[in-house]
Image (cartoon, rainbow, N blue to C red; front, side, top):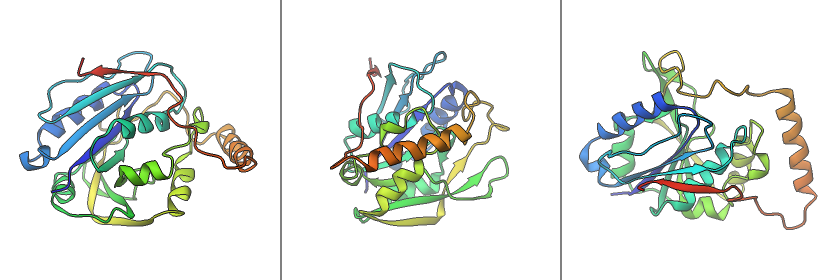
Length: 235
């Protein structure tokens, strides 16, 4: 069996978090015996993430500042505190399909490979394109690449930087028949944030600027675990 930790960031998603907890409790017991969950609230100004009994180990952390598009810091915190060999990194609006959870728990994987997922989308579970920022990889591989670079906090679109750095040290393989379940806002209104706009011209300009500044650094490393945070569950 493969033990893994599901890491998700949270931002103003109380309805979706309720769905996640209910869904996780419904997974087969043999999966829940080998699975842990870490939720990191990246500074929600209201309706903060909470913890409860989900019949598997759960930890909840909260970032102490509210920074636009700071899910990278949340993922870094979650990965840092995971104590399993494998990590499943995804967004709050993605639920792990039961057959996918069973496959991950029952299969032995190659730690040199980072695995991606296809998706099906509610409500009709129609096929949907793969998610560019959902990954199944070892914690060792995540740490080796330095995780996410928190220089990009405040701007949307850092997933491409993560993927490009990952490609330099690992092979990528996509599960074509082991999906994640995408939950659109039409189904669960707070599945993903409506607070911030995505892919603005300012985001693109900032990404370009930050990458250029970083390229000029000698022996640069990722900015990592740079935001204050506290553990809120278990208390």
